[in-house]
Length: 449
Image (cartoon, rainbow, N blue to C red):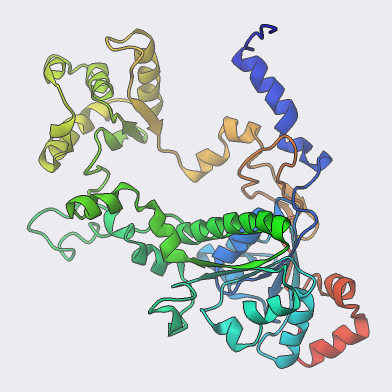
């Protein structure tokens, strides 16, 4: 066998970049370019996020909104809009054709049936049973199109005691229902109430985290259903409940309760199960410090010059450091030490310790907590193209997070950012239903589009 010499990292980086650089994505085929998706998302970014993932892979995605536009177009900080569209929707309108259709009307529903008969996938986020009440649920649409994959993302799932309450799916409700929000937030000191310490309350995760989770799981389910359809010719229904999807990230907390009946309480920037693992202040902000092994925790103590004073060489186990009182004690001792350095200085100290420290190559994990501005100007992400502006023919030059992975054969890509309400009515209705300008004017006059 011929001996292969391993290339250096720089050589490998140059090689793989030549294969998966997003700048060359337009020259390569799209994995899902033979698929047609109808995105009926209503008031929910979960469905929009799901269809964005598939649209980035080339699926012809038709976003169907009510004639006045979907409520998600208004989601924006301070009500700011760019050319009439909220900033949040500019992130999730990518690569989609936008048409309008009034599903509250019988004629609108008949038109949807005609479109669904030619589609591969329908994505909807209405309350459970709403599409069935309209006569355009999975059973009705699949009767005409047995290959149809029908993905529903809802607040409580398509079955279960609460599925019939007709509540829309809201990200903040899902975060609260998942059990995760209970575990996140600042410590509430013993003897105090939330009224005494209003900051010490359960804290939500970042924007649309629950919706992004259920949207991602729905996309995975759709891709699996497509694979099954290729083998059998049969479509299927996919049922995703957003709180249930987000609950997946409870991780060890679920097993901790199931096995030991211990409820994982919020512990601020500390973790009741792990040490060292949390936020620590610096001169210019803060860093995340991670240990998780006794040697890494000892390395941090050594790096900060406290090896002998704290007796780190005598420590035999991390077990004591998972106790609440020990964690609070050492947190208060570490804070003044990390505050003597900038975030960059602490990161550099960790790297240098891995080369020449007492326990080298063992070293603690140090990561600077950066602002969104710094993230967007980070040289690494700039070089990888994640924040390359998209030159959109309608919205102009827009910076939105590009595709989340690279690929050598069929890479995802952003071809355009968004479209105004009903922008593609003429093209889509003519292509799929043969409706010309006169028919569209008639439908508009009747409030159908």
